[in-house]
Length: 207
Image 1 (tube, rainbow, N blue to C red):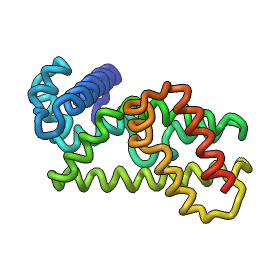
Image 2: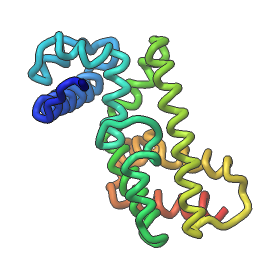
Image 3: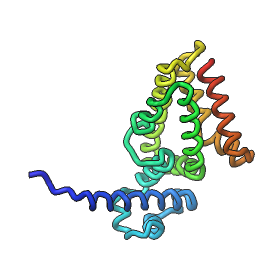
Image 4: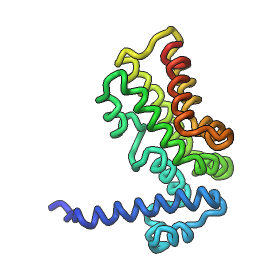
């Protein structure tokens, strides 16, 4: 006989998990990896320390928090294999690039404080570094997946090898580009999105 599953209990657990990840994002973004503690995350989330521990060690919470902040939801594997990929695939060619650029703009805004914290943590913690390697592998898969979808919609021109295009796309949409242009240089969100869409069109699709 299969174990009893309570939809209400599962929904409550999901809400608790969401609060913990949102608290982790704030705490890591504010204090960094070394300065953050599970106790502070628990206090921020309004749950017990034991509940936070049940949701993963510190390294796992940092990476899960980053993934949640970037994607807007928690999930497994590359983004193009999740709901985002399905949404983009359902759009017409003229809408797809703008949709993806708008998503990237929002995602980079959400992780702007957290990304440098993640890199610092990976430099000093082997567990974080291992998890970051997997995140970067998913990122590379997302670049290839995005280009395959854009190609299937007839948006790819030029003769540059796909891997080079994927590398350029990854560079353009990186959190670092958002930080330099929006946070450091003071660009507006609309100016950043317009630049990003134009840069992808010229340097990735038409090259």
